[in-house]
Image (tube, rainbow, N blue to C red; front, side, top):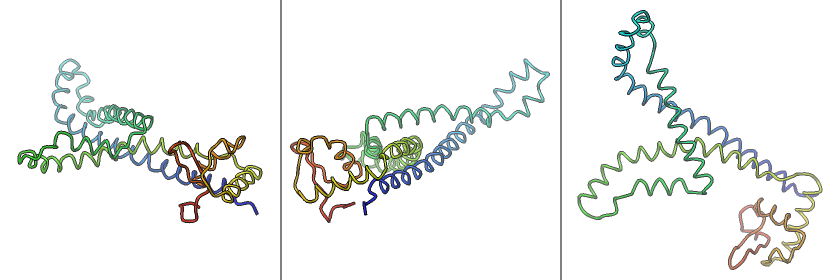
Length: 223
């Protein structure tokens, strides 16, 4: 019986993709709620200054202006601006393969490399503020990044079918019998199959000094 390597790989890709896709709208909702609340607090303080000139120039609509909930409406609209910035930042991180955690940690510690007493005190109090900012930044960035990851995992699926499964199983068995590091030149015509084995993490790959591969050892993950 031919092992269903491709079917299992595609199933994992779908499961991971769905997980990231479900997480994305949750993070978007948290980010949108946060920014709506922030702008609402600002607009509530400015609301009287907005309504008085409007009532003065349009007295006929005085009742409408005083009943209209400016903070709720405009905060929902203004919240879209930082969400656009979050999406753009996530897009750049995704395209440039930047580590989100590393970049946020670097930003959190920037300018606090000195060992002086003043810097140590500043770092103590700054960590209380930047710790919350770190968490919120990570949560907000998960909104676009989880969406991009969902799309990426969905696209990692491979063409299934009995012929492809048999081809993958035969090549994997051949590599297991050889059981040594080899290059693509030693498998001319089967480059696509080798690449698919690598995508499914069924072979060990080394790039030093050049691209080499071999069947996974029994102790390797996914072996």
